[in-house]
Length: 203
Image 1 (cartoon, rainbow, N blue to C red):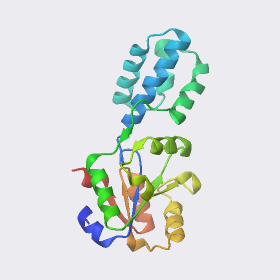
Image 2 (image 1 turned 30 degrees about the vertical axis):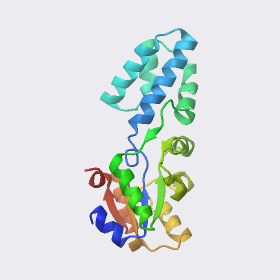
Image 3 (image 1 turned 90 degrees about the vertical axis):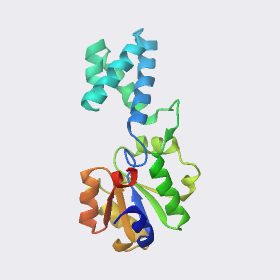
């Protein structure tokens, strides 16, 4: 179904977070900036050079082993891995995270139609909660019910979806999962609920 049809036919809309509600890079690139500033203070290295390197590595190769690559490039002591992990999990961002424009409109329409909005979020729950708190929700935060897969099992397991269905007295045919990853789609398929790729919202 298309988004407008789902608005008519579904009662519960379950969203992933990263690259569904907002672009994940908007969080990560600010974290890299904060980490580089910390290293400049601690090791007298040039923060601009570190940020540039981390941004290019992220855009070219993603997040895998990014600290290790950066540490090797700039001879950053291994002890700073703890600081990198902490800032990744708990960063106070210079700028608010902004929801995709069309995702924001969709969320507002869901709420205006009296439907339920859930976040069902994979990943480290402390880091994901930190992101949620720093998103500019435009007043929607009071309508959100948040679940973390660490409370059940990561997608594509259906345990989290089953928990939401049970706790909120919902049937699978009333629910749709909006995601960006194959695990989201497999989870929806396994739980026998509708799946909507976020690309269909953002077009």
